[in-house]
Image 1 (cartoon, one colour):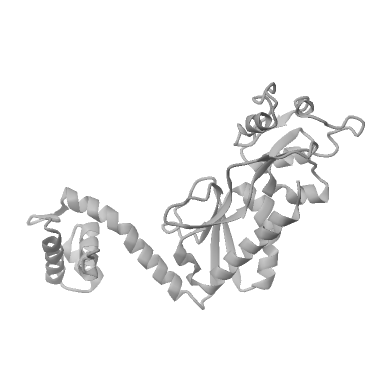
Image 2 (tube, one colour):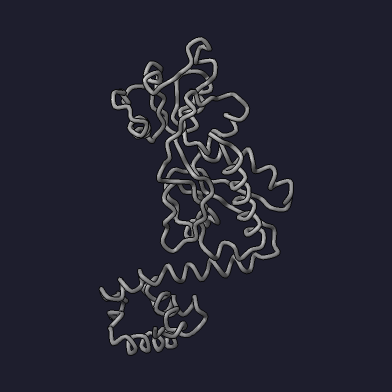
Length: 299
């Protein structure tokens, strides 16, 4: 691959962003003539006109506009990676993005262990259901629920996933324990934003007669978990988020039946995120903690 001179690219990116040779020169601490010369070199190399010049304005050609949009992410990545490298040894702040449900039900209960071992590190949790742009938003790590394929990013499986029907032990009378999927249909079904999960579960266990549209819908898994704990019905929750409740007995899996899910929780990050030693330590702690969970709790 033949790469253009970095200085010529810097001049083009700055002039294209400002639509001004003068402002680009001021930003790069060179003369306007030097900026023009570098852009001329880039035009000569690409055999492409990049700017339309007039006495009072500077405009990008259509080809240059597309080219500028394509190279900007590379400049952002270089700047971000350099900043991460320069921050090594300074007060450490790590930002992780995840859903509110994952934060409350899994990450926050375990985070004090890391904070106790690393008191100089500040971990900030950004909760959202949208897929964040790690580099442009300054996010070090994200936990994503999917198949693990995230082009351009590193991904490591944290928690394998399966669907568990769970409820408060107070909901099921001891004299009438559940013995089949049919028994579950006699109770209120609780739903989170993955409303189709109940249909998937009943289909997987070979029961086709359930009305899976009935029952209240909560905005996230945290709401449906609270409803299940309060004895309002039976919830279908991803196993990684209720293992502690199953362990302490506040929730039960009344049929001891689970259905494998094609998706899992993945830790996702740009490679530059682990330039800092403390970021690597946080990643290693997170994956090791998740590995313990994967092996500790049976269905």
